[in-house]
Amino acid sequence: MLAENVDREVLFVFDPKILDDIADRFSSALPSGLKDIQADLEKNVRSAVQTGLSKLDLVTREEFDVQTQVLAKTRNKLEALEKKVAEMEAQKQ
Image 1 (tube, rainbow, N blue to C red):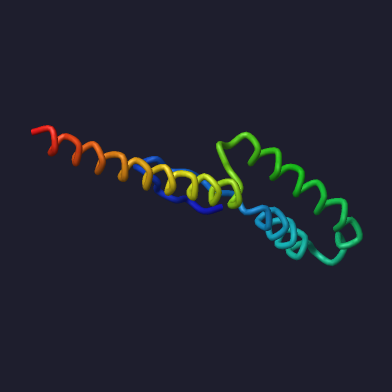
Image 2 (tube, one colour):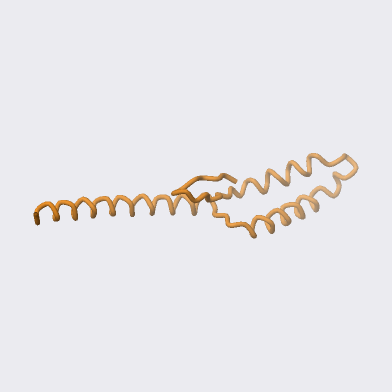
């Protein structure tokens, strides 16, 4: 998960690989006697983390990148329009 500051609003970008990393770390920390239930435990931990994260206001990295590109294009168009309006106002005077 990565926090990025965009126009004073903090967005959290979720990387799905984090779920795998959390599950792997949790299962590797188990005592050797519990290794036989490792797969079941990994599945349960992954499910619990995914449920918890789904309650948060998160977007995937891909969604964030797409929206960042859309915003950049929109800003460019706005700047071009502002420049045209300024030119038209200057000609009017």
